[in-house]
Length: 481
Image (cartoon, rainbow, N blue to C red; front, side):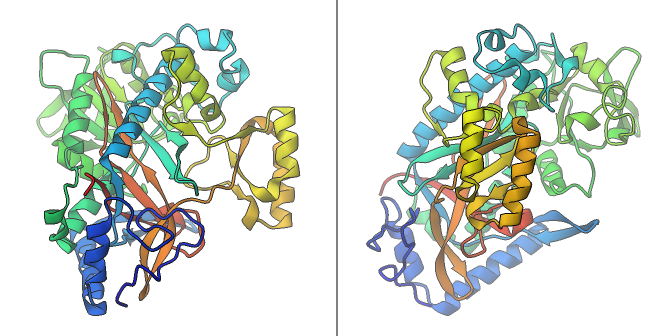
């Protein structure tokens, strides 16, 4: 399987590494040359080495199948994705701009509602949102930040332009796999790191810890930080444990914490109760506090909202930030940037249609076979209609659902997602991919240099989620050769 890049074809897709003429894109020359010089046996050995490293490092994710929780080894492709640093600098500026506007919007929703009164976003879209939390009204988190960790998904269309597909503001996951992908690549292709200036990502845990310290309610002392997990059966438990260990924070579940009569949060230890200052929570709002949300929840901490409202503990991400993590609200982010920041958006949204608006809805219903239709609050690639791959029955079902609850749906054109060379059996073939960078917001704003590249390992598929057959690649932000 000696690789002949002249024969490699991505059809009419934008390929991240190879031009339609079979030439390396800027910055990719050394990588393609190194891969082409490997024999079939050497490529298989590198692939096996990656699999063994993933097994030895215990890198897993959990899928839910017919009521069972199944741990699977992380699917990883050994061919990295490259992005030039000069392009990434613009992307990072756009992501910082975007998250600043989103935090300003969330803060406005729970305080003055100027943007709602001025018609930037319709009032009903916000106050009737499934993620709006009335109990958060009037609360002022440190630095005005509600979404401390954001994972915005980026896609590149056939013309090479990057778009923001969605913003994940509640409990975005995947950053541990970004970090572990880099560790695996260093084991498998150490020689490539000698020939490239690859910007590092391994400072993320330290950056995360610094951000969490910056929102502590008790200034002038080293804060106690904990990572609140739903437990070992959660699909992202590996990440919860990994980040807690890397930050030297405590990994806790709901029963490990208690709220005292002084409205402070304490962790149970063998030496007694220890006050907690910052909680990096990895459970959804509705499970956080059974006294406020779901009374049957065993995952949260009774009284936690009371302690947060009193300003005695910081929560990241803050409850209520999901009001902006809504695929319909997403369509208004460019308007938020103009309204709150007085700037033009650096990064573009994917063109979108709101089914709650009659002319948009009529267009969507007339063109379902050509569009991707998404419910407002689903995640993980679930609940979507991918029009070009749908059946008549599925389109009929979505027609009924859209007519019954138009606010809950939006639609976008079917993008021709960019691709990259991916090892498929004994061949190198193009596979579709996206990118999830992570943005940390506290006293300062930080963007990872690159992010988690997710790749659709099934030929022709555009669904990159690991729970639905996707895998990942290491993402290299490199200087131009």
